[in-house]
Image: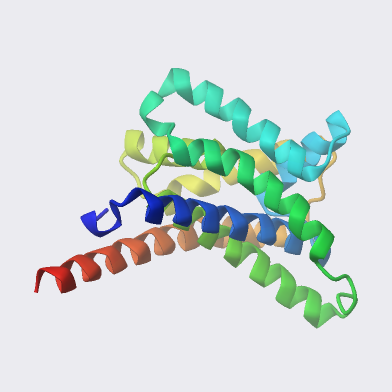
Length: 210
C-alpha cells in the first residue's frame, strides 16, 4: 500500500467505514431472504446454536479467530482486527433496528437488495483490509493463506466461503441463491476494492510529489 494512507486517523476511519458497510450488507441479505453470504450464514448458524443475536455471533466468531491468529501469525492482528471484530456486530444490530421492512415484498426489490448486500460486503472487507491495520476473522485467514500459498485473494476466498457455507448450513443457517452468488463474486470484489484503494493512494502520493 502506498504511503499516502500512512496517517493513523485516516486508516482508522477506513476500518470504521468498512465495518459499517459490512454490517449494513449483512442486514440487507437477511432482509432480502434469499440466503446469506457464507460468513453471515456461518454466523447465523452460531446464533441459532448459542441462542444469541446475529451481531453477538459475529463478535464471538471474530474474537475467537483473532485468538487463534495470535498463535498462527501474530502480525495479522492489529488495531484494525480489534475494531472490525467489535464494530461489525455493533453495526449489524444498529442497522437491523433502522432498516425498513416495507417494500421488500417485491421480488425485484429483494433481488436488488441482495445484489447490493453481497457487493457491499466485498467492498467493506476490501476497504478495512486496505487500511493495513490488521485483519479480523476469516479475512485474516484469507490474507494469511493468500500470502502463504502465493495466490491472489480472489482465488483463496472461494475455498473459505465453501467451508463457511456448509458448516453454517449444518448449524441451521439459511442457505440460498445469495450464498452461491456471494461465493462467485466475493473474492473478486474484495480484490478490486483493495486494488482501488491502492491506486487512489498512489495517485495521491504522485500528486503531492509534483
